Image (cartoon, rainbow, N blue to C red; front, side, top):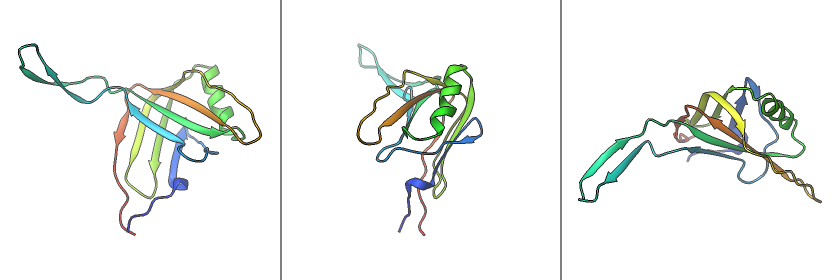
Length: 136
């Protein structure tokens, strides 16, 4: 039997652990392009294209009460470049980048229940290893 727990997904930005994740889906990692693509010309000739673009986007959804919002706010305000690492500590998946920055606008809403603060982080060279979780 394999084991997974959302609490075992660790996010570290600029050496600081990010905490206070929103319930449900709280993290997405998306490469900008497919690493290898197929190009077919008008005459039907196929070519494999190795894409040089290794960039990607990471979206983190935090609760409005998370103190990690302040960490990301400072990084956005100063336009700082930082390292990010995401690791499933019970498994083998890891997503990381040495040169990342907060990009995009953060939509702020308030209501009768806790709302999310969604942070978009652009990564120049995304290391994206999709592993699994071993038997326990």
